[in-house]
Amino acid sequence: MNKSRGFTLVELLYTIAIAGLLMAVGVPTFTTTMQNGAMTASTNSIVTALLAGRSEAVKRRLRVTVCPAELVSGNPACTADGTNLLVFTNTADDATFNSAAGDTVVQFQQWVRGKVTTASTNLPGYVSYLPSGYTRLVGGGPIAGDLVFCDARGDSFARVMSISATGRPQVRKRADVPAAPACPTS
Image (cartoon, rainbow, N blue to C red; front, side, top):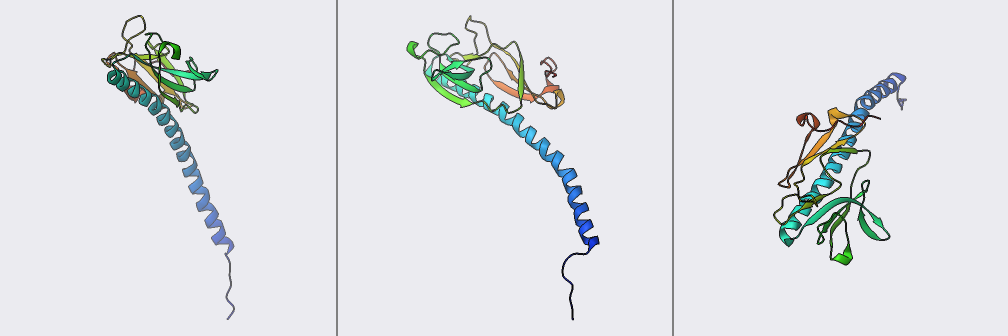
């Protein structure tokens, strides 16, 4: 008896239709999952640096500063558009890293930003912790404000990291923080 091998045209068309349907449903879901992952990684990297800074300030009984940073001539330096996060002991009580003055690097890590942008209210370019764990400006006032993390999806998917004068960061949905700045549109 002769047995046929292979697929019929109808079977092949059904297979292609099912594969197309799975792709139409799966690709947008995968893209959203990737965007959510980038947003989470970006917020988690800065929250981790802030918690490490607060913990080190209490442990070492010194002012510790956290800021976006770059390597300048082989040394870390706080910069407004830094792609890394610098956590350092701040013996001079300023917002700059100076190893000659006795500042030491506690942590230098990549700030996982991806395509995530940030906007802030009432936050300077650094967060400085006192030995009590509270935040303080170099001039002496408390640091408290919001940092908004945005991507191409806008305000509806944005996250807000709020930092209080007590030094604790908290991440929430943008809709839960009406006073937070809106995502930049471009």
